[in-house]
Length: 141
Image (cartoon, rainbow, N blue to C red; front, top):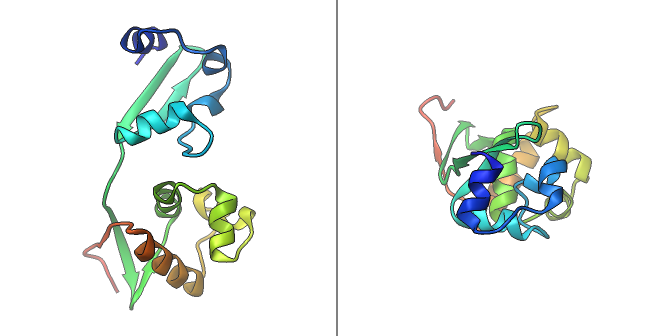
């Protein structure tokens, strides 16, 4: 969607920062009224091209399919980020909840490495408490 099309839908112009800062389009739930608007409507920003003045939205996935090893969910970066967004937390806030560093949450989300078995179990408990829905896939061990 072109920025100009979005402005027509909104009936107002976008702020200058929407045209110059990719961060304006981030899917963060804290401190970003604009992000809350599309996230509350069930969408996430998929990509932004500032040069072309275009943004792609996609329907947010509401139930995630996971794999398990024994009785432990194998958490991946996308799942961890989705859990964090579901809870409305920053990486630092989720890190505090889990007793790890913000950098650790960032590395999990970017796929630098996977959570340990103990961290995966803790993530599962946090997800259950937060009402985060997921289904076990067919390829479980």
